[in-house]
Image (tube, rainbow, N blue to C red; front, side, top):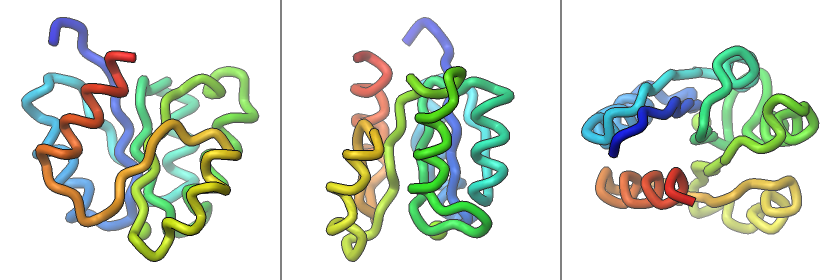
Length: 124
Ligand SMILES: [Mg+2]
């Protein structure tokens, strides 16, 4: 990997954010963190990440609301978004696809799985 990208990891669970950072560390990208939906939206607008990993259940704004706002704003409308869901939320994925999420990953996921999916998304 030659070019460094910015990845926004938005999850209210600190352990998940740490897992994401540890899993993606070897790819050499800058990883920024948000612990609620408002912070995620704010960072996405200010830092223009290449990829957003977006938890569904977060305080203030949930992941679907953040996704909707991202798609509405010209400066973030094209950002790649991978939703982090639980198996119980899979039923919502049709909804998520209509809102414009590019991919989703069901928790719990392994570091290798996350790394593979992120590399694939950034290569597209
Ligand atoms: Mg959550």
